[in-house]
Amino acid sequence: MKNQQLNEKYNAYVEARIPKTKPWPSLFNSFWVGGVICLIGQGINDLILYLFPSMAQQSAWAWTLIIIIGIASFLTAIGVYDKIGKFAGGGSIVPITGFSNSIASPAIEFKHEGIIYGTCVKMFTIAGPVIVVGVVASVVVGIIYYVIGLF
Amino acid sequence: MQYLWVFLIGGLVCMLGEVLIITTKITSARILVAFVLIGVVLQAFNLFEPISAFAKAGINVPIIGFGASLAKGAMGAVESSGLLGAFTGGLQATAGGIAAAIGFAFLFSLIFSSKTK
Amino acid sequence: MQTIEFKNRPKIIGNYAIAGPKEGKGPFGQYFDYVMQNDSFGEKTYELAERKMFEQAVTGALQSAGLKSADINLMLAGDLLNQIISSSFTARAFNMPYLGLFGACSTMAESLATGATLIDGGYFNNVVCVTGSHFSTAERQFRFPLELGNQRVPTSQWTVTAAGASVLSMEGEGPQVCMATYGRVIDYGVVDVNNMGAAMAPSAADTIITHLADTGRKPSYYDLIVTGDLGKLGAEILIDLLEEKGIRLGLNYSDCGHCYYTREQDTMCGASGCGVSASILNSYIIRKMKKGEYKKVLLVATGALMSTTASQQGESIPGVSHAVVLEMGGK
Image 1 (cartoon, rainbow over the protein chains, first blue to last red):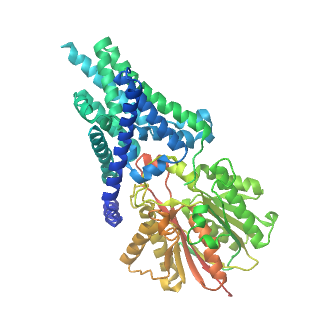
Image 2: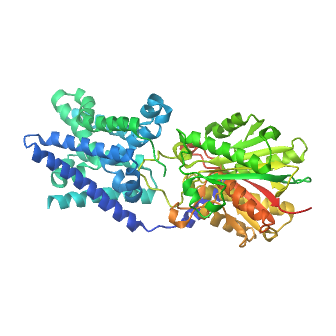
Image 3: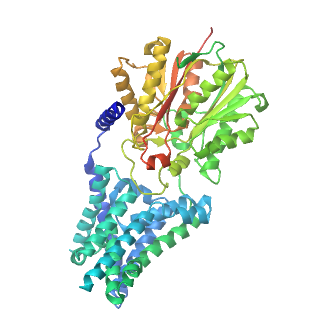
């Protein structure tokens, strides 16, 4: 019991000792990089609709996502995305490009362990929870929506 | 003007992620999970459409849009095909994004290796 | 008594340090025996590169001692990878009797202390100690893929790409290993895997306090007291912890991890990994001792005994630190 108190005291001391960094630069960087990534998405979407005026809005949007996911994968592969991430933090994690980066980076990292046990198995080490939580939540929402619709 | 809103709202959403990183030290996997959940919840309460109509890519490019598509797909499929839709709708609506992420990652992993930092 | 004194004083008669390109650009770059052009070292995987570093370190240390691998009675080695593969596979290449050690980043002092004990006991003549670490192998095992776009937290440390080897012997010239203090495992309940300095500092403090109490010495007895890889924050905590016990570390105290990189290299709290103390001891420190600039050195290598599994299960990170006393000159 006494040990635990000492540990808590030590941890509180360490917490106070940690160098404080100013949050403003990283907040600003995440803001503008995130904004620019969204702008690029909007630009690609508008370009698709301009080139293919008959395309449904929803299809154009799906193409947009596929394109920016592809770009992010490529930037990850050539070792650029992690530099953007180091600079922008949340600015490049939160967009769907961050999701793409979190799938591509372990896939490339673990290729030496083989295609099956390396690339394919490790591909979801970071993005796995995103897909699992998202799908489970959507199923729950769907079921609730169905039950509500019964009345 | 449209583009300004996309930039501002997209930037703010991403900055919210950075605020989470700074204040709670959580890792990127948890950030992504949290934002997907936000999207699912927004859509479940029909709040996503009004924001999306206004913010366009500003809310759709952040992974919130991915969560909203999951929930929207499930709800839409429930309307057309009943309870089965709750299970099929979500992944159907997001299949493009997931398949693209997996496909590109697989392709590039065959070509590239991790770089020295 | 945790401290033992070696009556026959085994000597470090051969030493070799090899480091990666980023490390070569740091303040100690000019002291390393070899700086790699790129950290894949011409190998297909980073694990193979790490192993090649180990092998080159052993070969270099043998050369500097003027010995052949057949002259070595025992290899003591350890590293950070699971099942210490770099060490074992290096031993396979050299065909020497081998004991694998795991002390995380404390391995250099652990292997020197163990080797000196075995030689002093009269069972072995020549023992080679080798350890090291590689940024890219450690990163993928303990943290995230290299290409993941995330930010490093202010308390994090950069795993060095470096290895060092020492040859211990009864005959020959070199710094003498006079004493060793084997450390206890100390855990103050730090769970943050990005704050290894805070996890290890209590164990370093415990080992230093014990060493000073056992020997009746003051910190000023030594020309240099050097800890392994506490980093900037860990070193500050160590100073605080010792001051609480009434022990003041002076200008003769330094931390290898803290000064391993320059400020511009942006490594947050400094360096970590087995390679930190291994490469600095086997280059800078031994060279300065041979020149006579340092006569009495206390090397306290610090290790964070963490595993990703235990950390994910919420376990705190235990630390262990071993100290060896190196002295130059006649009896």
